[in-house]
Length: 405
Ligand code: BGC
Image (cartoon, rainbow, N blue to C red; front, side, top):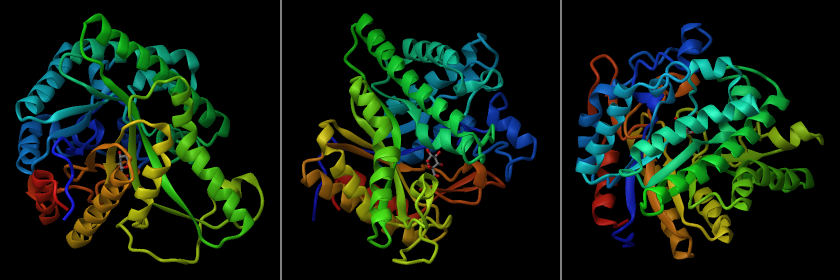
């Protein structure tokens, strides 16, 4: 049997809008009310009230860390009007985690924006970054004594492409120019936030924090070994996986690399042309794999390959998300076990992986897909908000408690 080190982090993640419920002051809420999305988030998992119960479950499952996000639109529902009661709420959240012996991993932007910010133009406007930075400064001054691990922005490229290129997330636009602007503005915002966070810790004479983003990495694989496909795999890996990280690395603004990994992208390019090179995938079910309930390929080896490809950056890596939506709990456990095996293998090869955070602790609101996909370690019955721990979660908890796989 293989054993992870005793100081390895084991945990699960959530994000505010997906679990809290009642986040009425953000851009998603508005889009949901307009009927432009599959279903509204509504009360979601009522985690805002039930966080203590949910954390007790995580504790029971042997977790020693927990990732969640602070909802900017709760803290600042109107421009410049900061809500002390909401700040106190997140103090309670963090205190509860600390009391249970779980290290908080705190995300400052996880896809949602205060409505006032998005109505001014949101991330498309360079000068509006200052609002995000003001929020970051306030949060970090407030929570610096209690938090070591920060994630400034979750999956910036997923956000910019879904909201501004593919048109499926608010504000549902299709503009390449805006996508590029949003991506670069987020990179800038991270760079500034990084310095800001470190400065606050220095001023307060606190130990150095660990600051990063959570990057969504995909395993780009060749369907057929044609020249077009090889070029496409190269380009996509560079552009989607490494480009953003490398901008931040050049500015020395990553203390670790947060990795969100889910699936394989089987590259098969129909014809020359940049759009084909960047987007075409195999449509013929060549090289079939097991799939999650959203049809994403299950490809654990991809995680190993990506982790090894990050080794050259010489930074610790934190798996900040990895998970599967499925109603088949045996498949869920296979997914987790096999991915952990690949993490172990990468560690053996010298990749300094600090921890594994499963997505998600509880079933939740899966954005444009609504509540149907079941990613949770814990089942949520949305009729009565009852939580039921899945057998796969118990199996993972054995690993968390012993380190043995
Ligand atoms: C996001 C989560 C999302 C998960 C599953 C990640 O890209 O950070 O918010 O629920 O993937 O799709």
